[in-house]
Image (cartoon, rainbow, N blue to C red; front, top):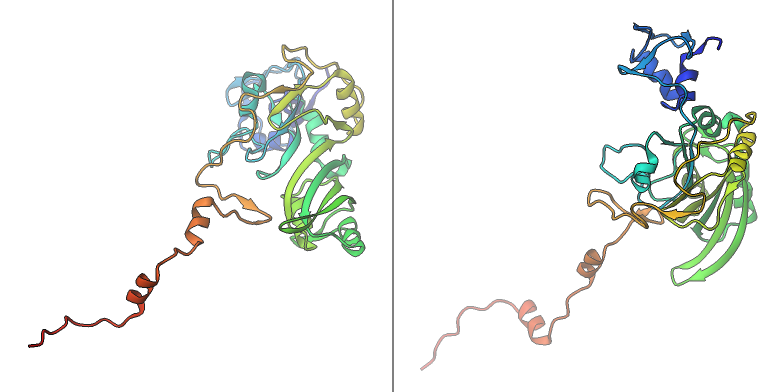
Length: 318
């Protein structure tokens, strides 16, 4: 095999995405034939050279695996979290070994996310240059006008830079006790931090719930929060086509089924005490706090004692 860039080799072997692999190289954590390779332009032959990451030899013949997971709210899409919040990998248990999540989905959001060790596909799906669409169903306060929809579709300034054009439509509008609400379908191909929530907030539509329903053409309405399944070979090839890649080898056969199954911790994870839960972008009021807000009823006698001026002891008269 001809020589290839180290970051591409690491990504193809499932060590990490290409961007993370570049960081590993610049930090001096990669060695080729015993020599530290700290330049991003370094190349190697994975069939001939001995490549090590953090002292462990790289095995390039790693079978590709692809798992579709429906992330519940209050899970993070990382392998580990410094705030000790539950990660999506805790749902997979042993089935998640060697996999890492593609892209991100907000802590307060739910929906489909792909986990794989195919670094090349992961890079294609996450880089906005390849314009792989992601579809979201968003429930918001209020009913957007035609002008509001036009602003969302044309792009909203976030952090001094306008978002890429999006596709937006109203699925339905309805009235709740808290007021008018709408269910929107929003399709974007960027992956900026909390982008959909911030886009809606910028046009005056606070988000109540947000769920990702498809990645490219990949979707599965049968899946519920906490469920996952292996992708079928045809789905992998279609996902590669969505990302502009040629057809690759068939995914590895595993013991897990292509039918949705419950994860290790099914459903919503309990929110850690140090995490502030929000509703519509505002801190959620707990039942305990709500009880404190209710004024305590007092009797007329207690009220009279409270407002009456204090008097000294009554003097005895003869």
